[in-house]
Length: 387
Image (cartoon, rainbow, N blue to C red; front, top):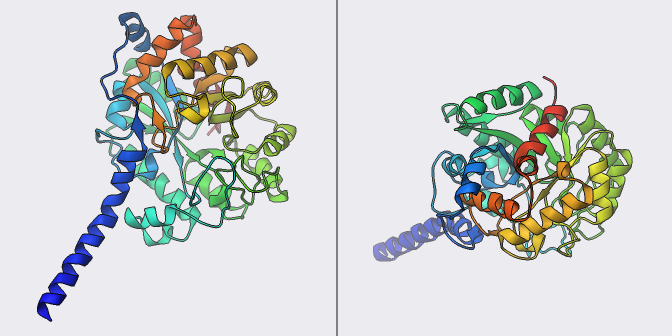
């Protein structure tokens, strides 16, 4: 009997260790790169890159149980690698629910992968059955990393915060501004007042949907793919009243139309492709590119195959060129989707290769500065809450 108990205990310990090790294995496997660092670039590209304020509109690093302040040899980014890549501003998104069997065509919201991931990563018990608490926990992770970073990772909540940061960055660029965003608004759990909870936790950019339809509206990957719900219309008004930027990534086409029909402030798409270079369920049509640009917004071009139809710098640049030609350079930005279970051409230290690709494509230094971060900086300085 004693031998049997010891054997069962050993099996249980092995099984438990395997469960806790699984998230890191998934992270290593699913957040991959086409080629490992270091990433060569020409001397002119490297010199120009060091002069740029670089901003990226989408990174899912908070989903994973990694220390943002520590350098890793897997995944796409962390603070040390961001600093090496000369990133000045990073939007960190919070993923709270994804359906099992996730695909780009049609998903129900009846199942969820993140519950098991939260348990395996030993997130607090209250996150296991609350999407709001998952968002708030990831916000706390970012706030704690900022507090522990000795001023190298700076939370931005207002225009004044960002203005002060930019002034400090110009003196010493070894720092990164951090802005919180939601990957869909299902964390409000159908309650308008929970937008205030997110705002108070530091969220300033809000996606409306992710991979399934929710109480706010339709997803590009949902079952119905509809427009704004009655609650969704109230949500848009509340977000605008609080100067929270609305992100149309993953939104269905009717949802984009509905938001464009009632928005009074600039809109953004944090990470996307464009139909002009890559046909896809969530890639933006020319009409939607023009509509978003007309609000004064920006479109973040993604780096992964479904967004740009290849895993290469050339494909990213092709989508940037198309968008710039269609709606103007001032409306184009970067939206990597780093750490969002994508296969990218490089990790964040490879960004000089993108600068070189833009140079080869004939963009001027002024245009490159705008695309690589200037447009996002301008949008945020005019659209974040005043205080």
